[in-house]
Image (cartoon, rainbow, N blue to C red; front, side, top):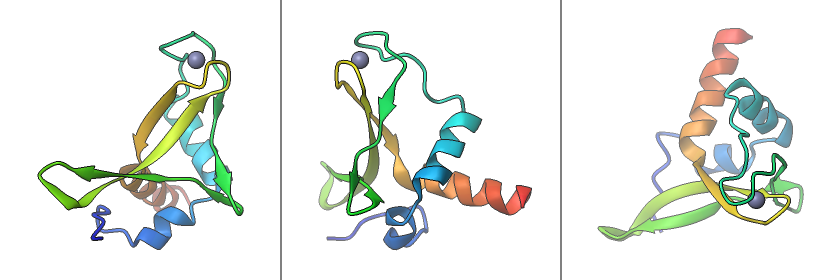
Length: 99
Ligand SMILES: [Zn+2]
């Protein structure tokens, strides 16, 4: 299956560390209250030491799609999705600009 990745190798997204992701979420102030219950505690699931991403096929072409990062509310387990390729690209660009 062909996965669009905003010019990033899929491995670059898959190898994103929890520390780099947390720094990104803090920089973007991206952990606002859960829209379902109001809690402010988000969970990122891991598998074998790697952040768990998911894939959403496009209805126009199910052979391609988006790589998504699910953030799960720690209280009610509502799931919020972020575009993993775009946030990984943003992290790389920020790190290149800020050493
Ligand atoms: Zn919630």
